[in-house]
Image 1: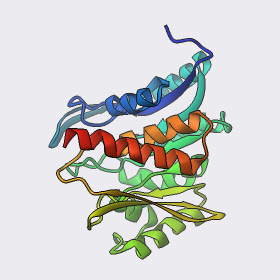
Image 2 (image 1 turned 90 degrees about the vertical axis):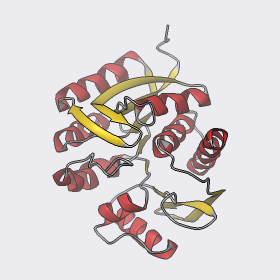
Image 3 (image 1 turned 30 degrees about the horizontal axis):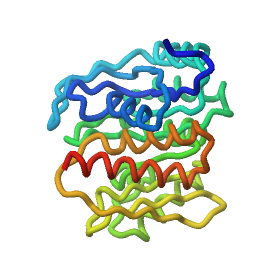
Length: 251
């Protein structure tokens, strides 16, 4: 039985029936760090590894109620937010986070599936930028997501990606981790940007093959390390190492 005093990571995300991404991967990553999870489910999806066939979104007030129940029931030391889907859900999640400003939040801005299906309504993107992102300790966009959030074409090189990330900082984000999985070259380089610090690079060899769930696991692992009180740079480094090692085993 989960004990109220044990540190938990609250996962706010959607399910993936294939197990390749979403809540299944979130729980796996947090458990690997040795912490417990509790859940607020935002959507139930019918999907396989190469397609999303159907999505049922959970009512925003029910998402908020799940979050509040988890926060009352457990010691929530960090929150990971993933797929939200609708503007109302973005607003509902932001309203709960405002009630708990001391809890660090990692936002994986899930805008589309690996197969290309839109997972956040277009009209909700501005709401995410203005209402939700400033409440999060870290936002972890990949290059396509970064471009959408910045309102620019996708970056052609690292310099353009950093400029896009700084646009998000200027808009109020506390920290941005630019993920390099969609770039090219032998290394996958993630770049951490914070308002008052120099950019920090995290390099790993690029693994061959198509991979799903890496973004979910990375954000959840970062949240788990934040829950342990570790500095943000160390959290990112440990999480990136975990995801690399995990997928290298599967390759």
